[in-house]
Amino acid sequence: MFYSNGKGVTTITRPRLENICDVLERLKGEKVLLLLDSGDREWVKVLAVIDEVLVATLDRKIIFVDCDCICAVIADCLNVISDQFGLPVDGENGELLAPEEEE
Image (cartoon, rainbow, N blue to C red):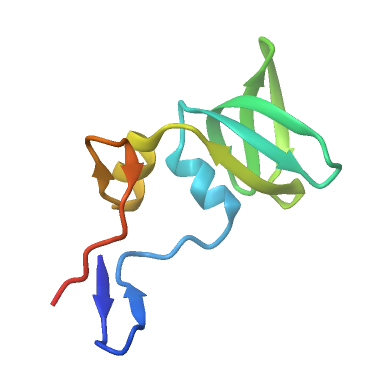
């Protein structure tokens, strides 16, 4: 997943995510906090991503959000983030660890 050239440069060798929709695609079924261009923050459950549109639930309503309107996604699900993005988790502290370098 990661490769280091020995000079402090680490390269990700797994497929790169193109945009925020790619991240949301991997977080299907998870509850996340969206930070929108308007300045609003919304807790939603990700149902699907179709083309560049997020389909999610908000207070028992289904919403459709253009991915270009999303500035950031905050996900509080370490195990999902760890599994989806190949990042190790410290079992004792429950924190993400720096990725191990492959030789």
